[in-house]
Length: 305
Length: 125
Ligand code: SF4
Ligand code: SF4
Image (cartoon, rainbow over all chains, first blue to last red; front, side, top):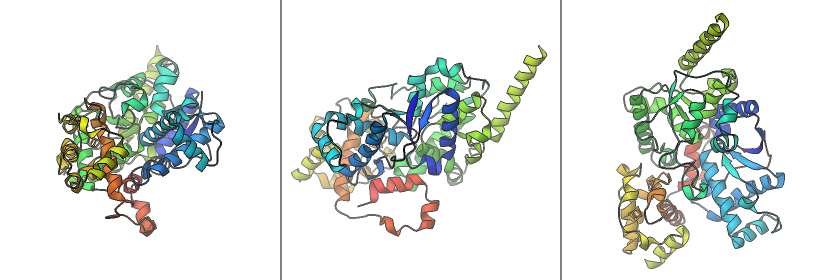
């Protein structure tokens, strides 16, 4: 299984733990991730400013993948939304496609966009292309006893029509299922489908932080040991800004925020240093120690019996 | 006025008149408590030919582009796209914008990437 890895701007700058753990996990479960030097910004930031440029930037990335003959694996949910939307738009709209291709100096007829390549979020690839059976067979350490709150964010499943109604945007389950493969418990909590607020950050920080605070409160009440998510924007809101939100609302959360490949990596028996846990802003040390002590005890049990 | 409304319809590719004001979009909106006007009220003002009132509200800027309204609308109106269209029209006017070149290296190093990205999306004219 081979994909071109699309990092986007936020994962390699602000969420390197996400990138690192993704690369390690992919290696361990047999997904080959190829870096294409042509990949750049997905186009999302200029969508409101200049729609044609938005299409053009996204198209450039899609063309690079098509030239390499690879489907794309995306880490950031906003990049995934952008590349999926544009690849479908250009596949079905002849006029727009011809215009974009001529601007980029490419001949028409050679590129089919969504007709030729698939763009998928990493989580969807794990859930849909690899599947739970294959991943389960690679699990070395069960994370039983750990409870986590899954955060889906918005652009992973919405707008649902561009994703062919994959999963269920109103009652999603793919991430829950992936979490349960590790034997950790995935819990339901109030406002599970709620947005992280990142999209408002530049406009009004107070509002953005208060949107994120609502969910942190719900997760805290739920008693989960950690939040598990899959988008660097959401990670920045809940991990990077968690302390600020706590100070602002006179509380403290101390809630580790794990990217899903970090959680899966632990279950695959990958050393925590390789999974980038030192880059998590809210330290997950006590959670990791619990997991490690438990797996040591299990080893001893096996040994003595 | 009508030309602005036509522009919103054109940019968003939505038929604004198919909204029957059920309010479901506003019911699920995560930013609604901070908005001057509810998302469905913005649509209503457009239907009534009052685009200025719709654009003067903070609603389109506070919209997080989460698409909850879009997937829930029983009439298939993509409200997030309507918000996007309103932002596009407003940004063309260069009323308020960030001069990217003037952001210092220090500021860039401490600003979260997402703030820069949403800045590009919403405040760069
Ligand atoms: S959900 Fe759709 S029909 Fe209902 S008020 Fe909102 S836009 Fe109108
Ligand atoms: S896309 Fe905007 S208007 Fe619609 S629910 Fe989300 S924040 Fe509210």
